[in-house]
Length: 312
Image: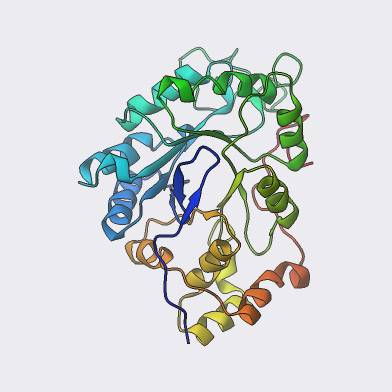
């Protein structure tokens, strides 16, 4: 017997505003109309949380879909992110994102990575890129800039009205500790968006962030490319037992753990079904939780930010 489905669960941020627990992720929704079509469909079927980023290069599509949807802006929680080449001037970067989105403000603005990429080689004004040094490595700033300096500047943004909250993404426990302990820190991040799924459960990070009043958001919740978790034997068995889809099982597992989950899809049927969550019976919840114990943990998103190592 499947428990009553819940499509509108909300989680309160440390700013006092609420964020819908299930949102539409738009990473890789970069086709001619992929971002627009996906967001329009999502808002049509009841999503009220849309997540994008400057580097996704789809803010124009996402914003147009929001503005064309007929849903009042005040009812939609919108997140975008500061790209690594613009960490020296997050206010300017946010203003550019808002212009692309066609919005007056976002609800949450995240530092996309705890890494600053040098803008020194950018001559065409296109900061939404990854600068490469002559040796082929990414042009990472390690001596002249760091994420603590970026955060100090980001702290000024909520007072401008351009964003209702600020947070981070891809931050480890140690990175958050360093940020919170920095002399200039005045604001605890509202959220930390990280890769998280049954093959990378990150319970220690979840517990730490919760202790600091930071809401975790899960990206790549189905295991990233091709959603490998939907082919997991355990997930399939739990889905059949509860008469739901494998995606509903995994997304419900995330919600049941008490944080925000951001499934990404451009398929209309999957967008609709991904919003449906239910309470997994205890034995099924445990079975999904134990997948990483059986198969080992696996991180999928591991960009090379050498010499900076983000996940320690």
